[in-house]
Image (cartoon, rainbow, N blue to C red; front, side, top):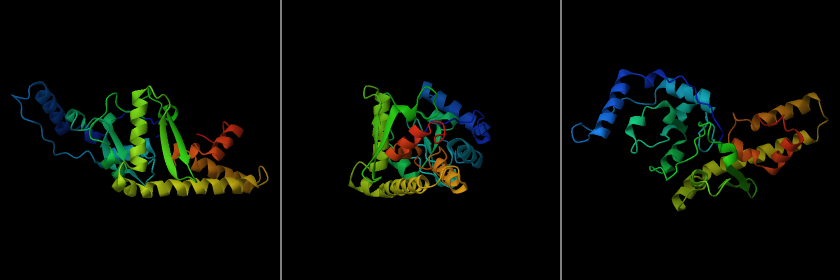
Length: 246
């Protein structure tokens, strides 16, 4: 996960009268369920202006796994606070996140006590509060809380481990493609580092390879935080602390 900045402007599809009426019905039902009908919504939250806003704010990536897609149309829309916990937030812009389908299906439908770190919340820092590592030859991604006493961090690390590595035999198999994609990126970065290291400094080819590496490690690329945890990449950032990480 990376820290993100959501656009303040709410997409127009979330400001329709139908949406406003639904939210009002939710509040009435919550306050007096005996005298108000349970609200039913028919409007989709997968409108083009919402998905286009996702592209601008989330780099076309799943906010949980950092798998990158050509655009957000390929992903599900996840509710940070699930619909069954608070239906009034079904159209709340700050509650909507682009999520890869398998990750969305594997995420528990109940929020654990203390909740999760929110990458769009300035009070949470998912880049420093979670420790990202890869074991083996770019094989198994691991996520640990920076502070084991912080339940939010523990919950978030547990969720990321579940989504990347599975929690039972079927889910271990269904997440294999994700781990394979991470391994391919790991190998690609190692190869680029090896190619770049043998070049004379400030030649055209050296600058090109250096820029390619910076792009692979940018927030706009897949699996940013896991790739930045690679020992070879950490060494790069120690040598050029103001160059490689955007």
